[in-house]
Image 1 (cartoon, rainbow, N blue to C red):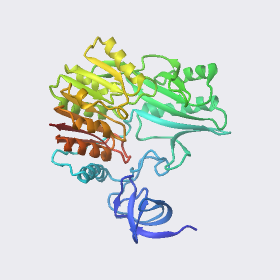
Image 2 (cartoon, rainbow, N blue to C red):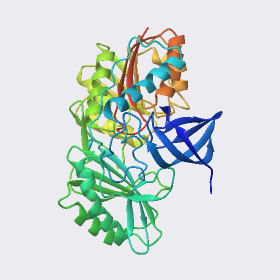
Image 3 (cartoon, rainbow, N blue to C red):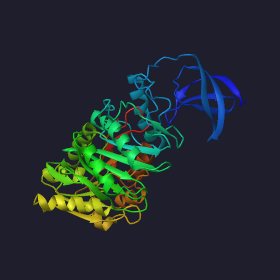
Image 4 (tube, helix red, strand yellow):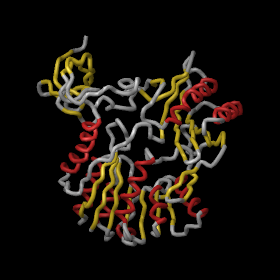
Length: 422
């Protein structure tokens, strides 16, 4: 039998686990809160300590609440449903505080975190595995490849959750035992967009079955992509797979990145527009499908949008052309490997950048050498944001505003937007 110990939980760590001390080692125990007294079974080495599995809750700490979802504790989608709302938001806010402090950045411009509502996530990335007798469809279990078969979800939009029974039935018929698939569902303006990523050929029979699935479920498009290929094949198309940014309809590719919630997108857009202000020439770096590009253009700015994904850039170009919006131009460029140099950046009155979780260190270094008056950063990772913000600060920028946004409800992730001025 593995070693078991009794211990107290002192804090919540960066992954959402409760953290306690056993001798000189830290023990990380999922689904616990500060003040809990617990019996823990020690597991694998983790950083400066060990993973711990909760065997028994001996006594409850303050701030514990009943999780709303039956899958919580098994499904890896949520880590913090058991933490009372105000304490949960305070912990997320403190993640941003800690990241800024570690880099010696000021806190005077830090605002209160903006909360998320349940059942508002408009994008979901599901996994499916066909077994001999049935099919599992849902999210992976925490730290495992096993798929938890979802019967409910308190994070995703109700229309996405309502899709699951029919999607499970269709995939059970289309996949063979041991076949796997990843399914991305995006809620667009006119309905749901489904991308199925699998090695299994779906064929004409698959098209018919998926077309039947789309009827009555608000599905505008179903596509299939092989994992080794970049381009998806459209199997069913019943309407425009489009979403409006700044009043401009953008027809997005299957599985396109979107901000996690509509409310979060609106808040980020408001902060970006306010930060840019009256700037006439704006570079929108890591632009995606044009979330901020068209919002800025609607205010009169000329926008140069850049992203590494050709299909997203094509979507931006197509939407700008259809809207006869000549002041929006776009270009394919890998900004991690080849960031815009200071000389290129100096053409702009403001720069917006929204990089992936790893941040944009090279681009921040180039911005620090530029003369751009205003920089607005959007990030889903406070640690890499703070690293990049420190680079800007050393280059002469002042951090004027930081707004945390809880787009990723009950997860250990937090979005933020920040404004820098020379």
